[in-house]
Length: 245
Image 1 (cartoon, helix red, strand yellow):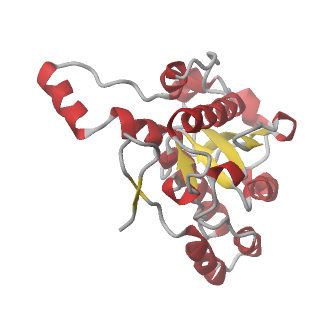
Image 2 (cartoon, rainbow, N blue to C red):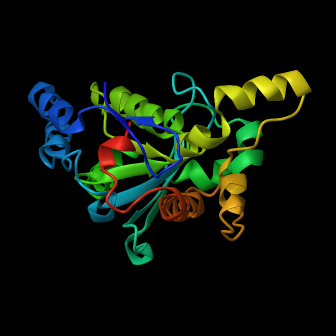
């Protein structure tokens, strides 16, 4: 079991899965041509320095929080590196969910029934979405939403799910603000733990405030957050295997 140290004095971090090997196995098992093509693009070697990695920040807005009962309603993504965010290549889609659009979610993300009435089903734009993701390392803020919803939505439409490596900016913050000792003292002193939500995490790095819950805006905000996290906490030569999950 391998552990890596970002910078001197920082916590040791367990290396993530061997994604190049996993992707090869997934390609061999894939039966749907669209997914097989996605896996054929592969992924960088785990030893690749993060300064050389091509990332794509991804954010989803959904009808709820449970992928078995909810569906994707909008997708935002933007490709970037540690040096530059490629806003001209960003994409944003509103899609028609196959699960009910509840009033609570409308209040949350502002996407209404009229917005989705003429929107395409995810299946119609799936080739574009996967083309934007393939070969890159996906960056999200809380991977259980983006990766599980993508997997579930594709499984419902194609009969086969999708897996891919992600860097989770929320998890990176948790390494520093959700240590066992911090949780212990928080419970003992009845104080709230430091927030690791996207807006609060950005504030710690003096990044500008963006109005949240728009998929494209949140994708850009996540890309900027990873750039800031690396600048403050990691060496550019740090291997990507220490960050992806």
